[in-house]
Image (cartoon, rainbow, N blue to C red; front, side, top):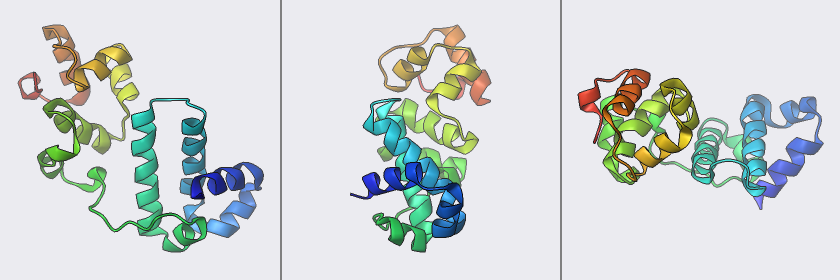
Length: 161
């Protein structure tokens, strides 16, 4: 499987060898190997790791097809990443998210290059508070909504309840 190959190759090879093998795709390949390793040992948020892996696979497949072929990655010719979409288009693709909160916030995070954890840090909220809000498990109070609003730089009335 390509995941095992990437992990073994990136952990065992000299960085210069990887650069020679994959060229400009080397930093993406190395980052992908780290994500695969983290997910295989159960470190980190599984959904977030999966999304990051898919983004890197899409970048490598789209921008570095020779490297993707060498790695045995599945070649994907799908829609552009949400980070490449204008914000209005990104928020319109709600079917890719489970609920309105995720549909509204995840494209903003992608545009900023933030993770859910980074949003929690920027909003000065507990990670679980942010995650539960995104999953629709809680109804945040006024001060929590204000913290989200300030961190995301959007009017509080635009945030889904």
